[in-house]
Image (cartoon, rainbow, N blue to C red):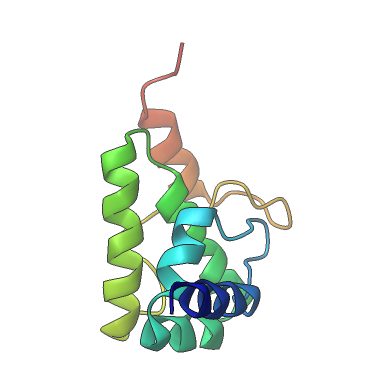
Length: 113
């Protein structure tokens, strides 16, 4: 039974769509593969929307916060959300300039040493 479960999980992980800039990280990939409802909704998102979720989940410093974000991706997808709420957007995209509002927010963040 355990081998069948691992095989099913691996097959589900192979069917997870990626974002525009970011690939789906392992922790998010496992969470999506283990929740069929969230996976269906994930694969229904646009590549840009998936990219926003991925970037939102990985753009944190603490492992506990990242786990919380991955958990929230799953729960909020199941609630019908298509993008993370109240977030500035992916700053890693190079296909468009950063908007003035995002530039302002980034200028207010403390500089890393």
